[in-house]
Every structure is written in structure tokens, then in C-alpha cells.
Amino acid sequence: MIGQTRQEPAMNDNPKPTPMWLKALQFPPIRLVLLGYLLLQCLGHSNFFMEQTKGDWFMAIVAAAGMIALAMWIYVGFARFVEQREAADLALGAMPRELGIGILVGAGLYTAGMLVLIALGVTRIEGMNRVSIMLPAISMALSSGFLEELLFRGALFRIVEEWLGSWISVVISSVVFGFVHLMNPAATLTGAIFISIEAGLLLAAAYMVTRRLWLGIGFHVSWNYTQSAVFGGVVSGGVAEPGLFKTVTVGPELLTGGGFGFEASLVPCVLATTTGVILAGMAVRRGHVVQPFWKQTRLPGAPSALPQ
Image (cartoon, one colour):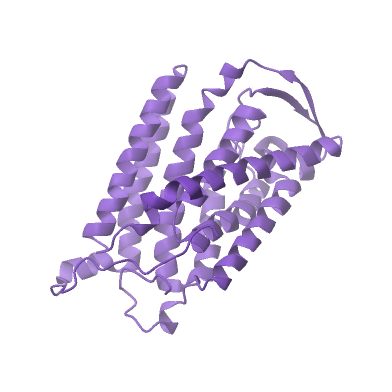
């Protein structure tokens, strides 16, 4: 089993009455706006710093790592002082196993999809580049994997889930996650829809099944890194960079994904969505599904709605 959930420990066995200003901050939409804004700033600054250090892969990694550390500090601090909870979804004890599993599965899913395209004759590998060409993609993979998971699963999915329940939150977070990719240079509506379906479900289910962020972070980091650094593919409608393998893909857009990249292809949609359905089923069996506030016995503005 990937991990067992448990009720987050209370911050204080004899809590003092919550001030009205803190109760207001703890109302789900307000929490979502505040935490989402702070994490979005971290993501934006990370992208800015990486652009400024383009050509210096080491400094780009340092910049990405610095913004990741800041974002995690903000997330943990917000959980403790505003939400009045321990940030168990970033529990360090679970990190090595769940992050490792996520990295292996994410890389495996992307590689499996490429092998399908090769078998169909849509993609071929015409050679290899030097191994050092894989270094620049590290910063992008780390930044997108960690910061986007903190923002879209740690903030958006989790807070909406506490209020409206797991399944409504899956839909909302998936649609938002997919359609923000329309801001990318080679974005397409098809690509945004496919990401909403395949990645939205997979990453939300990864959080549901473990009640932590590490598995989804592993998926996200390794998928993006394998796509860019290993196979030289376009990441979510971004700018193509050369990878370890010199790949050529020619065929119908339904299989190739067109200019948006492999994520707009039917192949990864089937693979990732199937994996997401399996994880969601595991979450259901473990009793990790949160009911909407009108089916809960707690107050709708309470900061934690983890299943027992």
C-alpha cells in the first residue's frame, strides 16, 4: 500500500476560542484566494528567474529550488497559523517512498506511451544527443512539479474538497488545471481538455489515495522531465527543447498531439486516465473520499475535512 491516512493531530488539546478575524480567514473561498495567490506568486517568480538564468542550467536549478523552498515554507506556515492544522500532506516521513513511486510511475507512463507510438509507426528515434543536454530541463521539471502541485492540489483541490467534497473538487481542479495551459505559446483547446481529463484526474487521485502531495509531485516532475529531457517533446504547448533521443513524430494529431505535444494525444489520455481511475478506486476503498459540507457533521468553514 502506498500510504495510510490518519486524522491530523490537533494543534492544541485545549484550544482557545477562535478570533472572528481568523474565522473569516478560515472560510474556504478566502483561504483559497489567499494561499492560491501566495503560491501563484512563487510559481510566477520561479518562471521569471529561470528565464533570466536561461543558458546557465545550474543557476536555473538554484532559482527553482529556492522558490520551491519558499513555497513549502509558506504552505506549512499557512497550515499552522491560518488553518490551525499540521501540514500532514507534506509529512517528510512519507516523502522518500511516495515521491520515488511517483517518479517511477510518471516516467514509466510517458515511456509506455512513446513505445505505443513507435509500435504504431508514428514516432521513430533517429539518434541520440549528448547526455549533458538533459541538464537544463531539471529546473523546469522541479518548478512545475513542486509548485504546480502545491497550488493546484495542495491549495485548490484540498480546500475545495473540504467544502464541496472530493468528486466536485476533482472536476473543478481538473478543469482549472487544464485550462490554465491555454496561456502556453502553442496551446490548443484540445490540449487543455486532454490535460483536464488525464492529468487532472491522475494528480487529484494521487492526493486522495495518500492524503499527501508527494506521489503527485513525483508523477508531475518525472512526466515533464521524461517528456522534455529524454524524448525532446513539447511540454504542454510550451517551447520544444532537444532531448537525449532525437525523435521524429509524424501522423494524425489525435495520436501525435500536434503542436501542443504528446499530452494532446489519445495515447497518454488513455494511459494516464486509466491510472487515475485505478487510484481513485483505491481512495474509495480506503475511505478517503470527503463528502460535501451539506453531508458533513462539522461546520462548513472548519479548516480540516480529512476522512477518518
